[in-house]
Length: 267
Length: 259
Image (tube, rainbow over all chains, first blue to last red; front, side):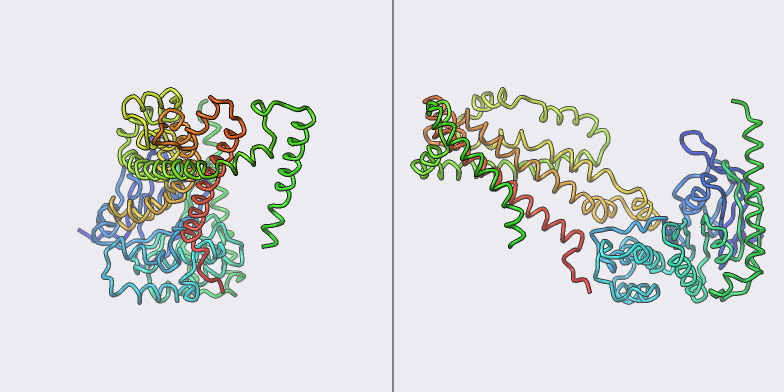
């Protein structure tokens, strides 16, 4: 039997408990350490796909494996995963360092390693100086960085990003994107990133998947063959713009196909 | 300090104007003191009965504090039980609402029949009336958790116990504090009402004094007891609010230094 890719989905479908079909016929193969970004119209199930991979939502049909196991078992047994949510989801009663410590506590990591790892993670996101402060004292961008440090402190094999910088202003978002890529160059996690910004998707990833409107399925896959490290100057390069144009075109096609479907459907 | 003065000045002026108008009206219309005593008469009653009132305030205060503290402990335990099982919550919540809707004036005499006069009955009435806000606020705090934070705990394979200790319990603190504020005021009201029925020669709380003086048409004395119980309520509510705010500040980490 040939070894399955690190992240593998075949004809995956997912139906919510209320009966709505959220994802349909999803095929996916991600090697490590890839950065795969997912774009699609809102409500297409991008975040749902991420949650299925994390083993937070059960799939309804097809196959989905992470490191060869069902997602929930993979997460519990042999694959360290982190999820960065749209909101910082920090615990307001914990200081910055205590927030970053949380995954280490929950996973029962050896206590003598905590301090060094927390320090390293905070150093990575440039927040070592505010370790003692509480989330309410930080700006939105800083809170998001704490959230990122919390995700990275366990040195995850799989990093799931759900529009993590979406609520931030453009300049902060771009800087965080660049910081994230710089870290990835060193640590090489596998990343699955949902974003609503085509530009961000292209800039970050080795490959961009385009989902159609719900029920979401993959309508296009655009390899992003730009070299790393990706610098801020590359944001405005013609090569990158060409790729942005291609992904946007696919997105539009997905939307119009969806509209014709809606018109044909009864009721 | 000047800030406090500036905040306190307008309501103080209103109070003084109100008292002056009251005094003037009572004198001008020569209203009978058993109907409406003048503020000066109430002041005199406060002074003349200061020993009795101080003792009564101490007793009622003790009953209120004991009632409030019992409500806090009992309410937290019940809220915890509710949060652990939907079935328990669904089975018992309607009876918790009973606490909120029961006419306490009807229940208090029953308690005196069962338990007798004195402190225990008074504390029981205070508990019955102040328990509900702790239960509802606490249950809400323990069950309503940000779904993102729950997912965060799930992704790191947190156990149910970890979720409880590291997420639900600390997250519920602001809710318990909000419930405590409401309960502290209610506990004083409960104690005074309890004393209407459970007072005796050995137990003369503010509620007892109110009932006795109203029977004798000693209205100025009655007013003095009402003033004392209002001040007591304010003191307990103020104390709990201040303590709650201090805890909340720590909880949010506002006390840590900002550079």
